[in-house]
Length: 313
Image (tube, rainbow, N blue to C red; front, side, top):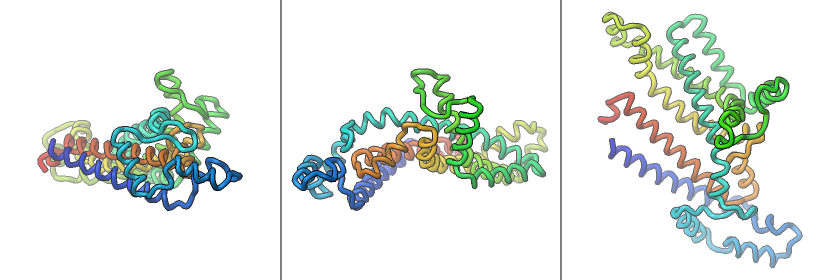
């Protein structure tokens, strides 16, 4: 298992480098001129050239990338070309916002999809059809529309939860929970739809297996059969979907953060991308890819816990 994890970590590091290299190259092909945007449209060509030299934009792309890579390996992601703020400090302030709503949405998705999927697989009939209908509707409705409805109805009209803003966990645990509830629910709708369908399908297949009939014949209780045996064997497929949903939730957080006025890395990435602020874009990409790699490694560990055959393999 240790060797397997070492290989996965090494593959993850390679993935981070490949995506970082690709992103840096693409940023250089956008055609934007950050130096001109910084000094303004009325600046002289000499001022633009001076700013380009200051930012290192007059150097070859390979040389600029090598400088960035050597600094990044040492933990220095540079500073924003437009604000002068350290990229590391900026990500440290914004990352908890995005991770809070994404992880909360993932947790809600895991719980609700498990309950709905198992109920649909066991009860079948009208409940099964209702769950499948809700899954299709939930998957079809865009997260930004759900976010707008929740913000207006629950946040503004009813006043049950804050419609905008973010409260850090260190400031107030209850305030933090209230501030992330609506954004997390907005993201969770589509994830529940996709994952519940997967749980339902996997549970139906498992409940038809021969060993399930054998366990029933031996007199094992239905609760133990469902949660200790059937659900454990159906879980890997659902975990795969949840891992993929995590990536989608990070992308969906960009829109949801805008709706609820959250200052996360999603809004930071879109703003930096439109300006051509390469250090900020690179910092966001590297951090998010690293998080995705960590999630996938955690998924592999969960596979090994659920299925000993994976550990042997």
